[in-house]
Amino acid sequence: MIKKHTPLRDVLKVANQRSHKGCRKCVQSCTLTSGIFLDDDLKRFAKEMGISKQEAKKRYMDRKELFNTKLHRAKQIKGKYPQGRCIFLKNNLCSIHKFKPVYCQVGTCEPEGEHTMTWYTLKFLVNPKDPESIRQWDSYLRFNSTIDGGELKNLIKDKKKLKRILNYEVLK
Image (tube, rainbow, N blue to C red; front, top):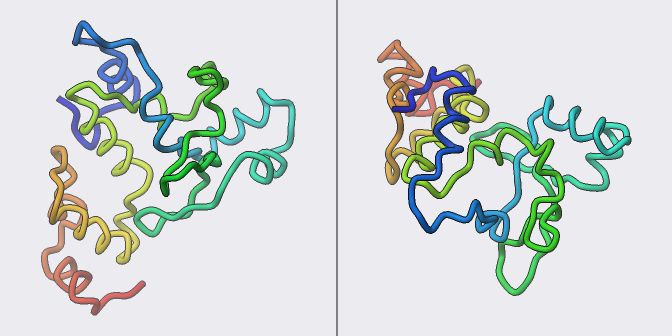
């Protein structure tokens, strides 16, 4: 079972298990969204592409914000829907598979997929030191489940402080 403090190597083992017979290791999610690039992902990507990190950002990335955390996401090729396919999806294959970002590595449509993506969100996007990030996580939790360690009481141990954050008494 994946928990907030599960090491990446163990999360990757779970994400790479293919339990159902019909699994083709498809790129279904790549047709609907694109990967998030952490700083280390971006450095590795730029190195593999033989370009600077700045050039990689300019040519291939869009700036996004999730849980009040600024990040880079691969550009999307939009069609008639608001979401679009990943710019790196070529002939129904990932053109950067050998050095794809951690976000894409942990993503899976397997039953554990929701847990691996929640792990990623908690590990890299939700910032317990940022009150706005905590408030956004609280909003998320109103409609979604989390993994062990992802509950607000585990992110902010001080109950009074958590209450003040959620009541907008703590802004920064």
